[in-house]
Length: 193
Ligand code: ADP
Image 1 (cartoon, rainbow, N blue to C red):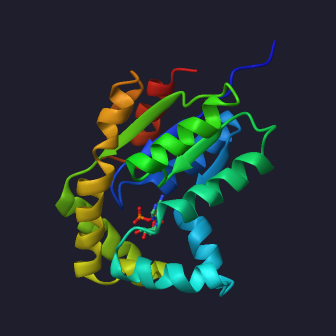
Image 2 (image 1 turned 180 degrees about the vertical axis):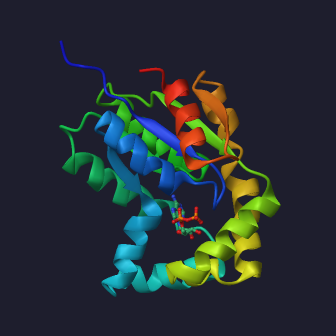
């Protein structure tokens, strides 16, 4: 019988540590990491038409159009159909994205296994992002107003997805404050494999 895939949504506000923790989880479970932020930054770097459009939106702290990020994720899922599973990082960010993702995965009978939500207080997020901005070259991490805008967008459009996954019995909150290793330990325990 086909082994069940491990498809994880790693969830949380900007600065919660999703990218850092993804690195540990992909190694441990052999998963493919799909970060829409990374995919968009690659487009920006390549100066593609999509990248030029995304750059302006990201620079303001707004969300990129649902259709664009959904198409990016769809392509990547198709390209890695033999993977042991995926870690979705920074996606879905809206209800339309979550519904589209469910549509893609359920049609392959490979549904989301769990949504793990890293929880970190806002002031700690702002501190972490300003710190990251000193070394990351990311313009959106260098301006406190843009950082707060992103956190506001998260609260308004993305945080409600906790209820969406809760209704499917898939939501688990994870304390995102502590050492990197402590937080990895909490995630691994929640995955339970
Ligand atoms: P962070 O979560 O630290 O803000 P990301 O790298 O996940 O960083 O995303 C950076 C920016 O890229 C977001 O502020 C947003 O403008 C855009 N973006 C990334 N993923 C999505 C998505 N799924 N939907 C809409 N916009 C997105």
